[in-house]
Length: 259
Image 1 (cartoon, helix red, strand yellow):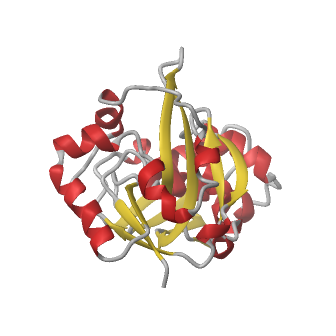
Image 2 (cartoon, rainbow, N blue to C red):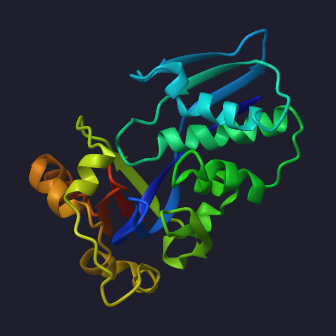
């Protein structure tokens, strides 16, 4: 079974409050982009994980694909599997590579062993692996060419399908500077605030207005620590981007272009 975990960008990201469980409430729009990893899962005599491409500095037991398999194994009588993961989505970049791998592992195991879990049930498992993992259960079925993505609330796991007509036919260009930004680093400098308007209302404005009103709350302090990221963002505008931003809490930057 081979699946292709997609990357995502966050169009707008508002951190609106700190939760009693230590997490943060946020508002964001998840939008899939073309960059993918490649994940193969096959039945085997013992469970193994082989990683190719970009290096991952973690033990097999800490890998999200391995955790996803074990999560399902608690509830189903699964045989051992070989997991082959070709990493092409950079880590720590805010593109959701690890989360996408985890969710696609759930999808692959579900199909391979005919577990007959629907998307709602898969999302319950995915939410135990990461706040943005449920989005990747849906990512491959979204009509991206017509501007379809998902609006995320709560920790990012409360999802609503949302179409932004202005994104139809938009070209997304992503750049990942050689800078690693951890989630802890990103959240350590952010000041939660609700603001006067919800992000989903702001996203209904014309795309040409987004530059002045659609914000990623991590940018201010991350750009101060890593000025190169601010420079790269402005380079997108010099190239003609209608809108440019940092994605999520990582170092990836993207620009939206009309071809």
